[in-house]
Image 1 (cartoon, rainbow, N blue to C red):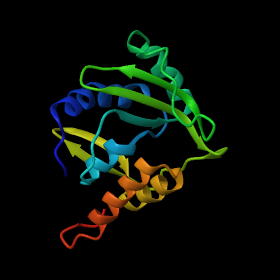
Image 2 (tube, rainbow, N blue to C red):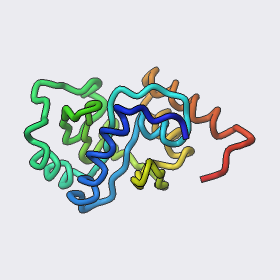
Image 3 (cartoon, rainbow, N blue to C red):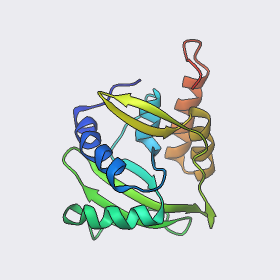
Length: 160
């Protein structure tokens, strides 16, 4: 696994236990954090969490004091979800409840658990992350997919 910065670890240590407690449905991390936890060399500036709409409602209530009300997600015409951004110590956390891309629900595919200093963090498999990122079609997502593809083709990579 690639290096988890102190800021990212601090954020994960706060949110992962809450996600296990407050989410009724399956949840996972996606985006740059998921790619990093899978071992890709990528930069991380926030933590993207994919949850159901109901779980998003619960988390919005639970984390209300940390919500960034004024934040608007990019590409809102393509990406739809019950969205909220929160300011946690370490880095921001973005919740996407029932994420859709061009009106179609985003499927995470197969999830794997990544251990981060005692935390079991669910992320999509490397192949499913690549598929998701490529479907998003943004430059930053294509770069992350390329970093994951390089990782997947490494002779030292153990299949997940």
